[in-house]
Image 1 (cartoon, rainbow, N blue to C red):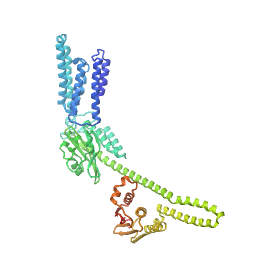
Image 2: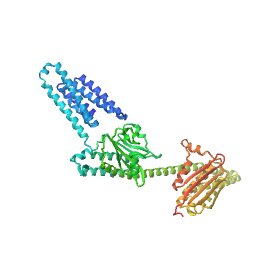
Image 3: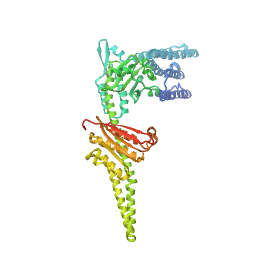
Image 4: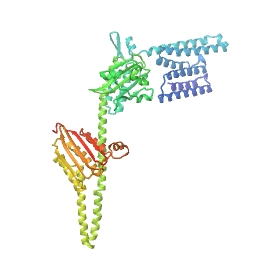
Length: 573
């Protein structure tokens, strides 16, 4: 509005035939006004908050308008109506009494300028009616604007209700001595469409922003002065605290990082009762008083975000108007919050699916890289060696047939070894025996492959195991045990590995034990940020797929024990 008024001042100065503002005066005024506007804009951008800031800006607005009127002719200035702007601000922001004080400041300025003009202009003193009429017009206009704006400000739910009138498209229904506003058909239609859009949103952040926007529109339709309302969506974090995740009209950045427990005050009451609650000044609330943005507010409404027996958080609105919220505001916000809870569940499920999809893609990429690395380091090198030796043997056939025969025997051994390596790799990718004969047979075949190819003895003890896992769980368990055995073979430099399977009640328990060099578990887990290997994390993530748990016990120089516990489903039993 200030920038628009400056543009209007320039247009009026250019079109004024009497040139009441000289170019130098206009330039000086505009320079001061632009600097002031830029400062205010910067303060708003930085979200600087102070209780005295609105008073300072109001005082500056009054001084700017008085200077403009003085430079352009005093009481007879065509710019007198610019005083309406600070008077309206004073009345709507601080009440009609402050609006009258602002009007009084302009009236006093006009009186002083009239008195000065009277003393310096004798002709004007003899024909005083030339200034008396404009002065009276200004006094009447300024006082009327202050009173009307102040009365209009108090026209809020409650004050409106007591009037029992009809305004615009809103109608009012009477209940005893209290009259509450009811939304018209068009307003309900608009709000319903916004709520439907909210339910269709799968973006977590958009859902949180939408509840504040929809509630703002809904409150506006009920007559709420939303310009001074503070909106907060607070959700539980991993520590069980409620912290802001979406907000409107916060005055300090610090409020964005503040947390509360949600066990006391209006928030605690709303969450405990699972119902919306209307309260008084948040500054007196044992938890909400930590938010600087709420300290000037005089009324607050809180609605829990709850689905079934699970509570996600709460939605808060607070305003500087006393007793601003009514039962209809509570009903309206509850309606939206129910929609938001459904939308949050949808968005949370969608986000979880996206994360699981990303994990699957990551694991697939890791499997591809692992296969490519093993192919490059194993069979590819062997096949290249076979090709070179075949060429060498071909040359020896005519020159030294005996040596050629020896070379061909070596080539045959190398080819057999390469075939075994490829079969081992194919077995690791998709052990068909796991689907046909079960977990124990697959582990025995894996142990045989390792004994034959790497000379590593792996003992499988399944005496206490009975088939109790379904096919899907067996695949996950096999992958975990295979990873544990490979870790012992590659990293622990073990000379012996034991695998034990057992069923204990309704739990499947598997152990991979090696006699390798062991490692410092705590140091390994804390060093993942700077290392590329995430073997232990992969084991735990795979265990989560079958609702299992992984525990690792390792001491440097004394080997490692990996224990997997998986609940046995009723269907498998």
